[in-house]
Image 1 (tube, rainbow, N blue to C red):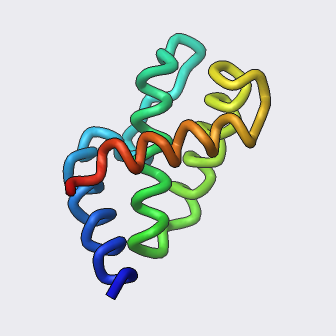
Image 2: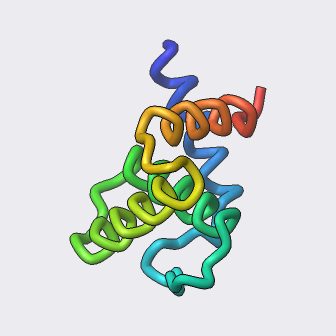
Length: 93
């Protein structure tokens, strides 16, 4: 039963992140950290729900690396902690 609740929460949260499509993201040096975070969350949620095309996986990987360096000093653990907190905070009750 817990898996169904988690899946539903992820689906509901993913539906609120529609603008974070990694396939359409214009990733440049000028992309703000906030925009990188939006795109990254969209990538993570989408990866939880479906198999993504290789091009989008590569794009998400680029976003991940850029975000990790620019916002979290290259620290994967800090990025994951932020993401998990955001996921919990944004998940409908």
